[in-house]
Length: 424
Image (cartoon, rainbow, N blue to C red; front, side, top):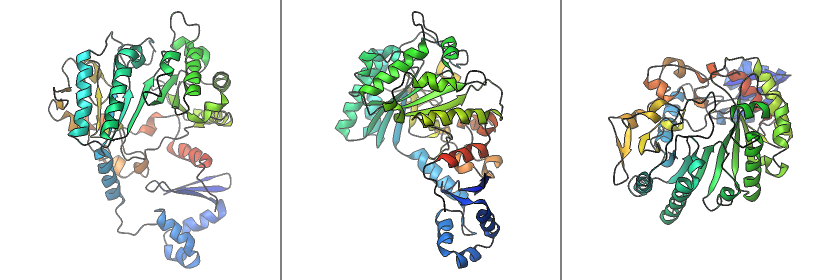
């Protein structure tokens, strides 16, 4: 249970059930004092008592919350909704200073493309996956749109249609190459989900992401976004803003709004993420929230808090998640040096199955929260512990140690703005 007081109101939140509501401060404090004597609440306000029980604010003494978390984690790890990340190239048209990748000249071969096709068929027919989601990643995947992204997307869509399983398609991309010719294909490919990154305000962005012959990559990418979302009303976009304490001011809202039509903004989610190489400053959260408020006023969706709701800390934790590199190597974590290993951690067999070296594939299905710090933490159900890779390396880190906002600040901001919050 989390009870946060702000401006005469009390925001109640339960991390196991994700239930939340608002009470006046005085009434809340009275009830809070009675939580250890729930029979008093039941006798005096039975309907409210039932609400607290149904929402897990009150639980029986013998109720094992950790057992519930572990069971839900097992279910999430083994759920047969297959996410497949495909990396057509590790090359990129940008050289962002903070990027962890080495952008080496590379392109996926026809042989690897054919093996991926057999892999998708194998996962459907042999592994019995219940849905397929492809995420195009890189490098910059749209550098080889015609050669890799388009033909593999068409194949996967048609195969899933024949096998009668759901198919979704998306990409993490810088957006530079999604021109009018590409945009007209997106509906045919069911390519509806995008994450595209800006690097703060226009001036800062254009210094980080620059392209020969392009006056402003900031304007170019936003114009591409506006066009593709205007001609295809099924596209959902996460506009990630990589920020430092210098590159993000309120001007960015005007600069983005000038190029994105009001009609498409309700399908765009603003996601701020601090560049990890920069120092933490918990004081900056207030300024960040003010900027997000203005984005919301302009009609954009705003991700004020990103809690875990599927009981895994990272999609790489799933049994039915894999990433296939341009060279056919199979791996789990794309935010690591595994992308550049000469000896593969895994590779595709002729029949489309994956051969893992040792137990690497199953090792990522570890319980990354099985450590004293996580098991005794109140926020475990909405965090689910650390990165599986860190856990396997014996490292214990809390994600909130690396952000500009505390958990309490992030939660309170979320609750105050969430449309589901109801006053009692």
